[in-house]
Image 1: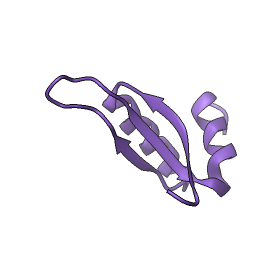
Image 2: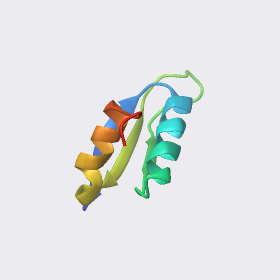
Image 3: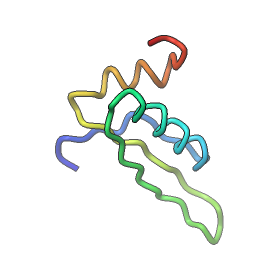
Image 4: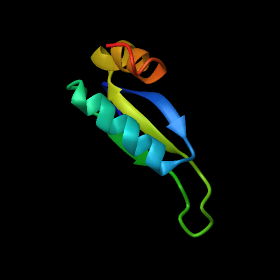
Length: 67
């Protein structure tokens, strides 16, 4: 995905959805890529953001209380 970078990976889909919502509240576009095998409930969900927003998005994910 040219122009996008993965900033976070998790095995918990709900965690990815919460982070996506938080980033979108800060006007950062997020794409979730679900690589989970639903039958076996294994795999990961990746959060991608535009390269230009990556640093800010990583900071928000690491410190969600700091704005």
